[in-house]
Image (cartoon, rainbow, N blue to C red; front, side, top):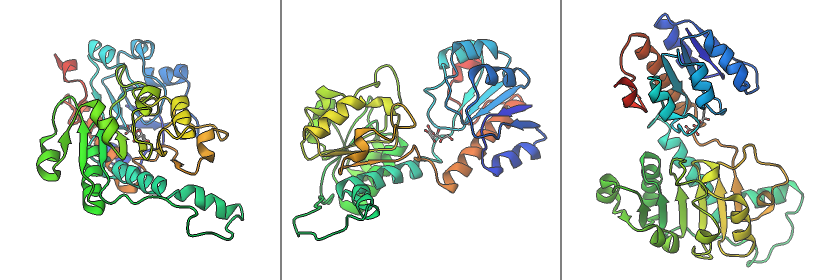
Length: 323
Ligand code: 8YV
C-alpha cells in the first residue's frame, strides 16, 4: 500500500489502481508535519511524495521499512540520499517530462524581466497607465545577447534551444562535464565559472542544490556580472543568496532577476524584490503544465509499480541502494 502526501494528477492514481496497488492520499491543503508523515508512512509500504518537508535521517530511520520512495519531482535535495541508500530504500524521481515546462518558465522570466512586464502590468492594475514618453519603460532586446547556463542538463538544454531559435542567442555554460549535445547542436561553449559570470547577458541557474551550490550566486558573483545582466533561477531558491541579490539590483550591479524559486518559499509579500521594475517572481510553477504534471505522476506511479513487483525503479536516483 502507498501513502501519497498531496493531490497528484489522476493518471498516476489510475495506474496504481490498474496495478492493484491500494493507496491513501492526503487531500487537505496543508503540508503534513514530519511526525504526521512518519505515522502515515509507518502504516504503508511505499511513499509517493510531492511535499516539501525534509526526508532526513530522522524520517528515514523511522520509516526504514519503506520499499520505495517515489518523489513527484526531478529535484531530490529534500531527501538524505546517502541515508536512504544506506537503508537500502530505492528513491525515484521524475526527470525529462518536466524539462520543457521548466525551460518555458525560465524563458518567460527572461522575457518578462527584459521588458519589465510584471511591473508594467501592476502599474495598469494600480491605475497608473498615464502619459508616457518614448523614453519611458524601456527594456532591452534579447536578440543576439549571450545566454549563460550554470548546470546545463536537460532543462538547460531546452532553454538554450529555445533561446537559440527565438533570439539567436549565443550559448555559454559551466558544468563539471561537457554537454556534447548542446555543443554539437547549439554551438554551446563550455567556459569557466568566472567567464560565465562576466560574459552572460542572461545568466540562468539550473544546478541541483548541494552544499557546493548553496548560495553560489552571492555578492562576490553579482559584483562580477554585467550591469546590464539578468539573473534567472528556476532551480532551488537557495542557489542564490537573496539579500545579496536584492542589494545587487538596488545598487545597479545587475539589471534584474527572474525567479521561479525563492528562499524561503512562499516569498513574503513585502519582499523588496516584488516592488522592483526589473524583477519577475513566480510561485515555483516550473513544472506546472498539465502535460508535465501528468508525466510526473505517471513516472512516480511507474516507480511504485516496479518496486511492488520487486523490480528496479525505471527512474532511479540511488542505484547503490540495490548493492
Ligand atoms: C516541484 C520541482 O517539485 O521537480 C522539481 O524538482 O521543483 C517541481 O517540479 C513540483 O511542484 C512537485 O509537485
